[in-house]
Length: 246
Image (cartoon, rainbow, N blue to C red; front, top):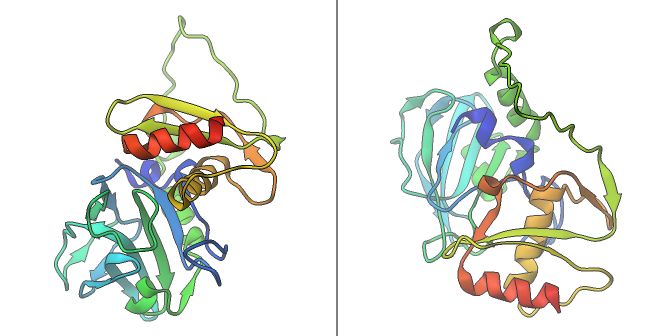
């Protein structure tokens, strides 16, 4: 998967600066939703720093781009490059940790927590700033030049325009059972009830990732592609269906 595909805004989860169950003061990075054990490409090349880990963000990896310019990746497993290695943009830094692995406590499902800061300690939320501008710049830099894009005729496929942004008060959750492949698009109106903290965190993370939650209302666009649905284990899938369908 390319840098532009992996870091597309449609895959963004919890944003920098928001508050939540794991970060009551402020979220220090940008979450990118992905599948468990999915390989993580770096969006900026540089020199790999010594690996670090914590009970909160799990295994981490930081990359130095210059004086006071570092990016980091958290909730990893099978970190790939060795410390001191110079890697290029798009090189894999590891895989996303998944259920049953050492993920760190600030984790509600497979994703990579990416950060930017003035030292390698940024992976622990120290000296951070918003990584979003750096991610967006990397996406733009990886896009093909305009003169290299070739139009492909598809006479038998109807063109369906993308619906405009809609503001609705009914949140929608898109889930895929990681064991059976079953998909559910769940809606709930009014007050919401959650059987467990895990079900609540799953709901919040999914809405934030796919519906761009920025206020008590929810910005809903086209449902995500099947490949981008949040996969969960069968137990949590059943819990979410039962709670939000009740």
